[in-house]
Image (spheres, rainbow, N blue to C red):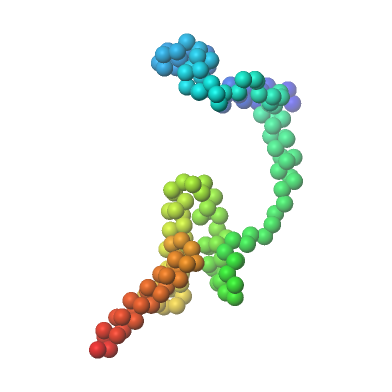
Amino acid sequence: MNDQLSMTDDFANRHIGPDAKELEQMLKVVGTSSLDDLMAETIPADIRLDKPLSMGDGLTEYLFLQNIRQIAQKNQLFKSYIGLGFYDTITPSVILRNIFENPGWYTQYTPYQAEISQGRLEALLIFQNVVSDLTGLPVANASLLDEATAAAESMSMIHRLNSVKTKDAN
């Protein structure tokens, strides 16, 4: 156990911040003499905390991992209801599993990153391909935003298709 603790006691040194030489070099580059001076120059006084944070003592990496495992054991697994909010619809299992229940579309990105839109668009493209393959139709629709947009896109597609049929009939 002592070997384990000695290997992990330096967690902060391995993962957090510059050493004294790097700190001195950084302060020289930004043109200030200390971190306190740097903070005074960059953070307005009216938003700075004027007392130390009460954070308690830190943990070694080993003790932290033990603690986080105990906390994680309290997690409960629940059924995913993503994509199951549409009344009176039957969603094929292949779509449920590969689109709605696939965390790859939403976990790699935070909701406010532009890249999550790429995952959503890819999911929609796959959905359209699956529907097209299953139905044998040359076109399938998938809303880019929400139910209202889906309805508008569907009506627009039907109107265009009917316009083509009307022109062909004349």
